[in-house]
Length: 375
Image 1 (cartoon, rainbow, N blue to C red):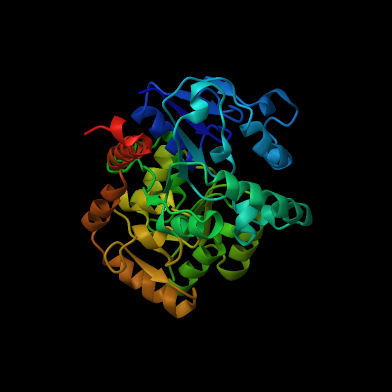
Image 2 (image 1 turned 120 degrees about the horizontal axis):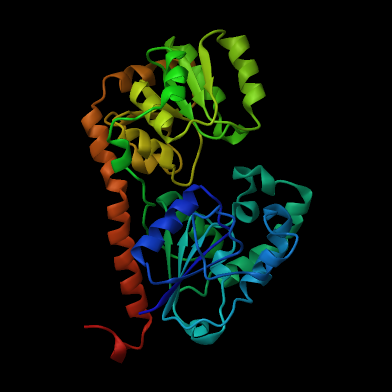
């Protein structure tokens, strides 16, 4: 059977791009389409939407109102099924040709948070975005009735799909390169100089340095447990975080700007635990930490509640109070690295490949007339 894979815009890196890459490996003969491809050569596609030929290319926020229209004007394609990787409007995709009537499936990272959950994404909490949401919600829910099956990347997102789209879905957690985090890191000379300037052990916060990641709570965890903190990443919140560090824990918080893969692995190997305060739809970083044998301190909300095992591979905190944080650090300090690695294996690329292949095959078969289904 011939298929088509569809994604939103394609960037050089990102969690949804990792999923799309995995889908390419599972379905290597499928055609590939996206809004626009700015992946710096990571992906080769068969086509882009007409938005890619306009000045709006690459300007996600400005292009949002036109995305639903662009997705409905895809070219003629001959295909037996369509699988969209959607976190905004890719599930609206409609082709001409035989693909027009082919079964469509959706792997949903989330219904558009700009539209449905602006409290989780400040980009949707503006006057213009709220006005657009009133129009787009109805269209989005209507398009979400077209797929023959929907897969959610977590139970957290599955509930959101039910609320926003009024659809049932199957949970298939996204793939994580757990194997890559089991091998020893190989930092280069520059990385070694960075590591030499850090304490021997610490609590680690790793993400983009932006407000909703709440990396200020990583600093609070270090203060509560009297342990140094390393914040690794870059972003608009860096100045505020540095100010908090200087005021609350002078000389005890260290910043590592945009670490590469090997330095990131080395930081995980050296840390006591990853502290992950953000509420994410799934949360790949906590699984990577567990794959490296490190426990995680996180909120029992969102995807982390599905990946971390309380008292075995991490500790959950509710109010992020000093007493809670001190207790959480005490708990994770005694947890088994082997238990963390074993838990991470449940979210491996191989597990994802098996589950997504089976789900697509069964869903497409179920969409056929009864007399043509496989036995």
